[in-house]
Every structure is written in structure tokens, then in C-alpha cells.
Image (cartoon, rainbow over all chains, first blue to last red; front, side):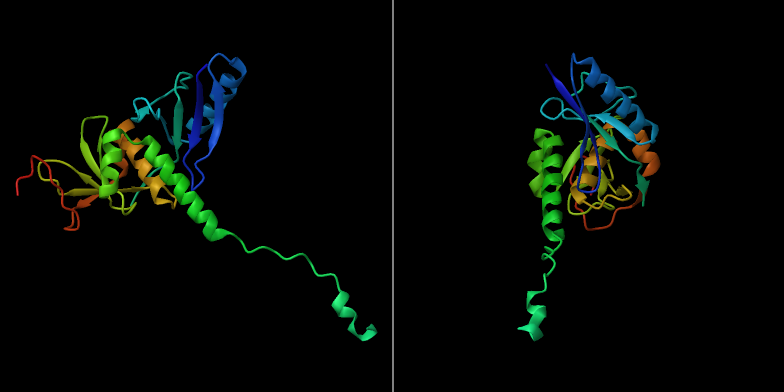
Length: 78
Length: 134
């Protein structure tokens, strides 16, 4: 049973805002809902699997196979 | 004792000092753990040197300097004289900004180039690449 998390980059508290277990439809559905909410904010949603590929890969839809999805709020050039 | 009634006045429980410094240190360490966990082996090896190199989704090469979270991205090109600044409003922890910058470049280099503000590199960074011409 692989698990995955959605992590939101914040100020010192990059918290896990959703967690799911592959095969557990309820947790996957809840995580998918949170993913959609985060994606609607206009930030960057990327798959970053620590321990595996470890490179950011942009995703446009919830991927239940991901080990970690990172939600990054809007960037500002300065 | 009647005139010293105030000695028996029930004092409010002492309020512990706000652990702001402790929180800050804790959050910095947690952010650094998050950053290190997200780096590749090669990037983790470079991290103590004060930078790590990132390959963008379009193939561009960038160096993220870790001493700052502003104007800390250098393009590793033939001339290597462009530096970029991109930040996260409301996020003040350097390690979290560095992690977000790395993910942005790797995941969507086009968006990075659109949103980051380029400027001519100053002399504080010494970019050494095999293609350097001077």
C-alpha cells in the first residue's frame, strides 16, 4: 500500500494538507478534492517524490500514484 | 496580617514567554530538512558549498545560491551573466523559498522565465562552467 501526501509550501510550516493511501477510495477522493482546491488558487502543483526521481514534475491533474505533491503559492518576481 | 491582605491575593498564573526564537529555529530546521529531502544526490553534495544546480524543464541550467532567497538564481549559459529574482510573498524562510524555486524551475521553466525578474549578474557570484569564455 503506497501512501502519498500533498504538501503546501508555507512560512516555516510547510504542512501536509492531505494524505491518501493507494487503494483507499475515500482517502484518494478527499485528497483529490483538496488538490482541486489548491490548483484553483493558481499556484504551481508539482510532483516531487523524495527518494525516487526527486525532481519536480508539473502535474495538471491529481495523480494518486505520486508519493508527494507540492503546492506552491503564486510566485512574484522581484 | 489584615493590612497585608495583598500577600494572599491570588496571582494569575505566570505567562510563559512567547517562544518565538525557539519556533523560528525549529521552523528553519524543518524547512532545511524539507529542502534537503527534495534535493537530488548531486544537489545535496553541492549544498554545503553554498549552491546547487538545477536543470529546467526546457533544458536550461541554473544555479541556485543558498545564502539568500532573492536575486540568487544564476543562469549557467555561455556568458552566465544573468541572475534572476523570484520570491514567494508571505514566505520568509529561505530554505522554503529555495525549495519552491527549485520545483518551479524543474517543473515549469517557461513560467519561471515569465515571472522571474532578470538582471545583469553582479560580481559577487563566480560562475564556473565548462563553457565560460572569460
